Length: 179
Image (cartoon, rainbow, N blue to C red; front, side):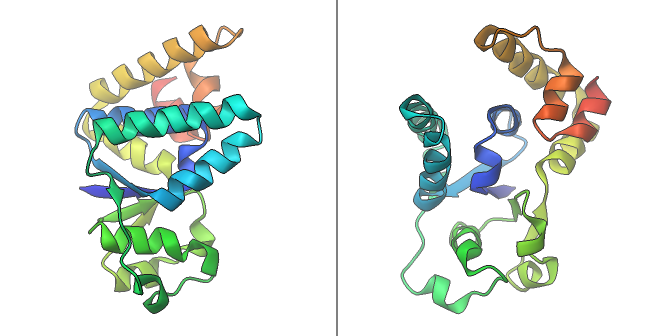
């Protein structure tokens, strides 16, 4: 299954690490576009040059891990697509161009299911998506979460616990399941 990662699910570090962690175990193949990476890097730059540098380094690691993950959108494709927010059409275009099955986004309002269905796509929020993977493969998701927790503790001055970390990362269902 191929899934486009909207920029809004790439920026929160814990969310991105959970998604890419389960993808690395074969749960799905992540897709993105150069524009989605640029949006992520722009948002990360709000936290200073180190934020942008970190996003660029993470994007390079993604490209190395999934060399076919970056989709190219053919000229003219966006012109034939429609979404309520024209600024999100590039996400839909990346999904169509990459022959994706779905889009992971926190922005449900601007990705109506009926419009996505016309292109053979579904939309999911990351929490429901990863929770569904947990239901099918609980040990794998728990192992990914344990690694994300270990990294969060190492990189911050806080002694994070699983449930608060995942809740802060907007993954409350997964937090309840693993907490």
